[in-house]
Image (cartoon, rainbow, N blue to C red; front, top):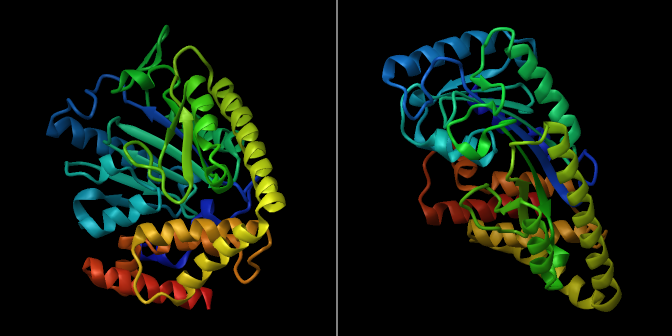
Length: 348
């Protein structure tokens, strides 16, 4: 598999096949792991980083769960390729930043992604469509157990897994859900819901995680605490909270249909009209309008396009994807023109 092969396939998390996928776009579980007796990535010298990369690459490439995977060295990728992987949620912005001996191993269907020499020696990730945190944890735990046959992790009997960032010490786990909440935003109830989530030690971030703002009415909700709880306890807690938020969103949608149906339909069809006819459109405007159409498709107001196709458009209209599709660098205005062309073609 080559990097450009990813262009011709749909990421597993975009397929709208999991539980509650009309509201929950994706579930992701990530483990932070470090090899014993080696300095953390931020403190390791060049020789130690090379040792970490060599050990992990050799083990990952022989793992049965990563058969036919795509192993990429960051030093061999240009900035466009790195941004392409960030947009697909396969690597972090930290891994894409400058630095030596960094790599990623991506499984055939993009379910597994393993980053090497990011903040920690290893960042193991599973990402799936819909509300599938428990299944994602099961898959990642299985992979992690296999890797521990070859690796000895840095671990303390009292504190658990040792990590570069103290907030990850313990399980080393971050579980997150990307959830689409347009009706709560439209009914101005989103503030109270997010405040309630924050009070129970869950973090709320934007479409691309820490440091990003919510756009397109998408929010990432994840655990902040890893110490003192098992992976299963943490996942069960998030799963329970997300199901409550999903129910709030459903009620808000019912309220809109009952009290403001014509205004809602008008908003949805205006969004469709712009996207299906615009000659130039920015990334942010496209995301916000696609969000409205996604709501319309879920409510069977828009029947011309399905949820999976809309999910794909959230990614393929991003800057790096547009340039990879076009096969050349594009300036901002050229990207806005190409984005409009792509949207008209898909929505006509």
